[in-house]
Length: 158
Image 1 (cartoon, rainbow, N blue to C red):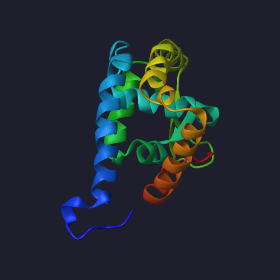
Image 2: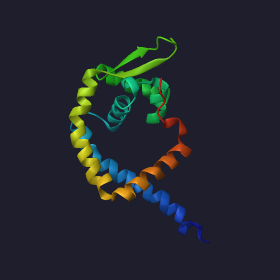
Image 3: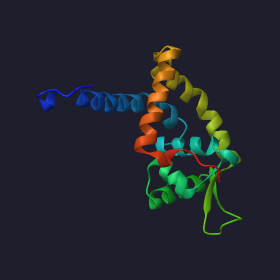
Image 4: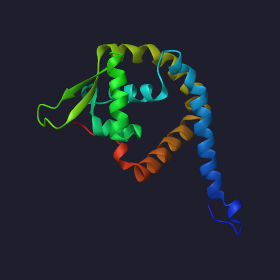
């Protein structure tokens, strides 16, 4: 993408603007899937990250990074999910300074309840809009952007 003489016509603004608009539109279309199951988008994001992690757990610091929350923000999130019985805190047996957020059986059950509705919405409003080869290229592109802008967001095995 080449810049033009007029900075307001710069195609980089178009790329960033389209990404932001697509994100906003996608979130608004997916929101009913988690809301109808008594979750916020942040709740579902955390539960999914825990559910897809080895041992169904993540260090609190890794969960904070992956959810783009501060340490105090992730503490509040995990506290709320723990009160709901969806997550528990575990101290590392190897490093007593490290605390893990671990998905509980109740949390996994809630995920399994929301996933059919959520996945149908993801298919309708995201993955199903692209033919397989375009979806593969899109996912590769998103990983390139994520890895450069937020490399700490990739999951680590504890």
